[in-house]
Image 1 (cartoon, rainbow, N blue to C red):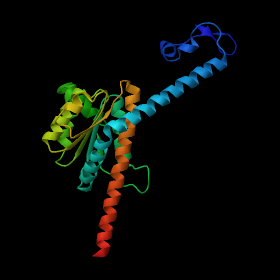
Image 2: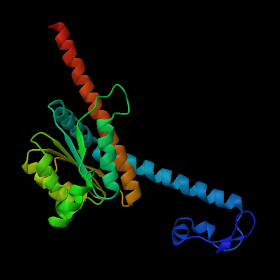
Image 3: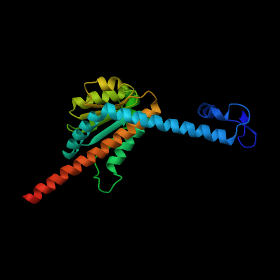
Length: 241
């Protein structure tokens, strides 16, 4: 219990509140100015961490990012569908990636075919229950994946077993494989089944996920630019003919 920051009245907080906002429960009367100062400091520190990890990601993965975008653009131009997957927060990132491909945020971008492998909860729970959770993506790769398609797996640790199994199956079926991983890249970076591994070299999961969101949005932007350039060249060739 602590004192209200303005009136000195007792206030209570949950364990979550005490964990994330310790300065509100330090004991004694706390001034509003002190609380705002600590909140401001915490926010700026998080911003600095986010920027630093994004810069480290670019330094680490720049060449792989460009190469992956070029390979993905070529695959999309040939009619590929992208299959995206991950666990927990990485699931929502996979869904966000697919949404931006299917429903581009800019009118000059083209819609591209994509499937998020966690969207069909009936399939996920059936495979998890009947075959095992480590196979929830693998079985869908078998069903949906065609040679030349794209498999994008996201894992903050780089060690998610179901993501690694999915990459192995995707490679067997002739898919282009792109992994997003944190820390040192984990098993994803070392897997021969992963064509391109884009590593965000952090050790704090929220910051890794924020950096990974930047990575896949950069991939989308690069792919769209490459496809537009390719279309421009094709149009110019047609005019000359």
